[in-house]
Amino acid sequence: MHIAFLTPEYPHPDLSRSAGLGTSIKNLAEGLIVKGSKVTVFVIGQHQECELNDEGIHVIALAKQSHIAFNWYLERKRIQRVVQGYVYRESIQLIEAPDWTGITAFMRFTVPLVIRLHGSDAYFCYLDGRQQKWKNYFIEKKALRKADAIVSVSSFTGQLTKQLFRLRKDITTIHNSIDVEVFQPMDLAVNTNQLLYFGTIIRKKGVLELAHAFNLIIEQQPEANLLLIGKDSRDVFENTSTLELFSQLLSVEAKNKVKHLPEVPYTEIKRYISQAHVVVLPSFAEAFPMTWLETLALEKPLVSSNIGWANELMVDGVTGYTVNPKNHKAFASKVLGLLEDTEKRMAFGKAGRQHVSEKFSAEVITKQNMEFYKKLINS
Image (tube, rainbow, N blue to C red; front, side, top):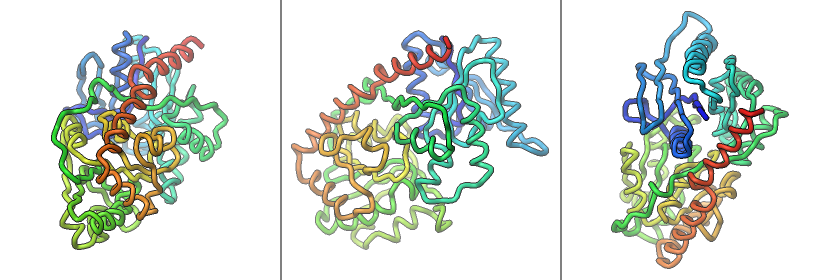
C-alpha cells in the first residue's frame, strides 16, 4: 500500500516550522512504514524545493509560487499536476490532506482523496467566536464536499464540522496517535512547584485565562512558578502581542514567577515536560491535541480544559483534571491540589500513560487507519 499526504507542514529541520498537525502526520507515516506501507509526504508552501528521505518516509517539499491572478486557484492546480505526476510514477494509491484552508479545493486526482479533520479555519473561528472570511469558508467547503471520504481526529470535531458546512457525508473518527516507545517517562529531577504550558502563546489556547488562574495560585503558593514554551502571536481581537496581554493580566508577584522560552527544539520538549511538576493546558480550541498526548505518555499530571474533544482524550479525576478555563478559581484549586499531593500526581501520571498506551498508541491507531485506507482503496 502506498499512501501520500499533502500538507502545509511537516517536522523536519530543513523545512518551515511545524506544529501539532505536522507531528500527527509524521506519527501516522512512521506507523505505516513499520507496517510495511510506502509513504510519500508532499509539503507545500516551502521556501525551496527539495526531496528528503526521513527514515523511510519520502518527503517532497514544494516551493510556493505566485501567479499573476487567481493565485488561490492556479497554485492549487499546479500542485495537483505535480502530485498527480508522482501518483502515476510511484503508484500512489490514496492521498490524504488536512481540512485547514481547504488546500485540495479544485484538485482532482485519479486515486481516492481523504480529508482528515484536524480543525478547519471555520471550526476554529466558531470556537473563538470570530467571523470567518467568506472566501475561506467557500474554499474549505469546496474541498470537503469533493473529498472521497472524511475522517476526523475526534468525534467532537467531526460533528461540529459537519454542522458548520452542512455536510451529508459520513465522518469516521480515528484519533491522533503517539509513539509510546519514543515518549517514555524520563528519570529526571523535577523542578519543584513548576507549572508548564507549551504551545503557541495565543488566546484560543487559554493563555489569558491561565494568567488569572496563576495569580490565584501564587496567592496560595508563593513558591510556584510558570514556564511558557511557545512562540508569541498577535491577538485577533486586540491586534497586539498575546504575550504582552498575558503579562498585563499578571499581578506583580505572579509576573516575577513567569519565564518564557520562545522556542525549543522538538527533541527537547520531552525533557521540559518531564521536569515539570504539573502541566497546564487550558485550551478553548483544539481538535485532538498532540501536546496532551505527549504529556500523558510521559506520566505527567495534566490540568486541561473540559471542552468538546477533552472528554475523548482525558478521564477527569483519573488522568488529570478537566476544568472550564474561565473558572479561574476551580482551575487554580486543581493545580494547587496536585502541587501538594505527591501520591495523586504519581497516580494520575501512571493512569495517563496507561490510558494513552491502550487507546492512542501508534500500534493501535495505525491499524485503524490501515483498515480505513484499505476499505477505501478496494471500493
